Image (cartoon, rainbow, N blue to C red; front, side, top):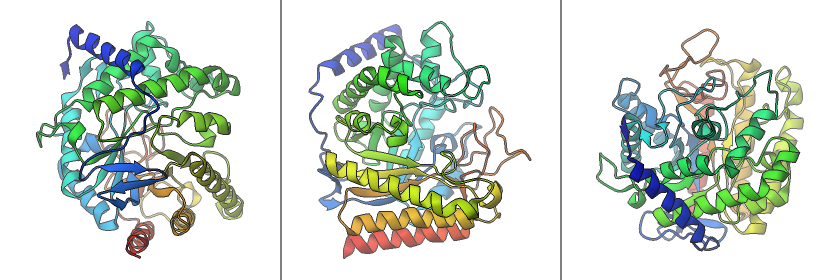
Length: 447
């Protein structure tokens, strides 16, 4: 663990202030060979339209560490397996905050403002170095609206005298946690601590390659947050909207000033993350390079977990309508669209590798067909990242609950049952769908 000085914090504050004076409306077009850029509603890479098959592997930097909680041999194998499937884009956790929140990660990238975990940072170095060898691109998200990596509530806890609430606390039922988390956008001290981290990471020099992050072609985009909502209740969403827009604009400007070769992403769920307020979703992406949407049929009660067979078709219709709505919005704002999270449970809501994936596979097929059809129709759809690659990870306990400090990472974060949405290295039918989709996208690119 290392720390920065008080002078370092003042410097980060100055960077945050600088962000306020930048031309927030300018588009970010990456320059140079190997960088992904945006040209209207499409990504470009070395002069060609860039579309991709992607995965979420939030724990990449964790197993990339040389410390006891890491497993570099496993990471190399996971990357090789993903590459063999045709996966070329990975969405990865680039920040976590040590927190008193239940089910949050330990270790974490940050122990408190300005005190960072060198073991995890070098784990991220290793991940990016290995991705670069395989011509893979990373999207790094820089904090979390939710509790599992510390996130916005932890930044507030660090700066507000120690106040926080836990997600799913019976004393603070939904949407109290989401409304509390969204207070971050108007919290000056919490935002300065966050901006300090953003400034540190975008200016980092990779300890393995010697390459500054800002010059690394393995990074496609910096993502402000995982699923940043303006609130949970509709009243909070509307009340927080201006502070929310301000945080987005200021942070996007900061990233562009620090890492002008990279794209800026918000990490948004889409309409569900804006309580279906289309105007809020559009305004939130004013200073962002591309639109994202996340699709969670079970979480959103679009399917009945006790009757996946009987409820699948109705849920699928809602999924298609959600996809179509975001394609329409992406056309309207003339920016690329990525379905960067989508997940579905195994049959009978089982969690173990080897249990059937009949409906999971039907859902993946639905998403991949929608992406392929959208590309054939020359819409703004650029690709997708399934949630999530579990690979060789396995739950350690019969209740599939991950205990704090355990390191048998799967695709499901510690607040969820281990195996709920993971694609394991033994899930041959799901992997076949991913591989076939990658082949079709490659064929479309060369057509």
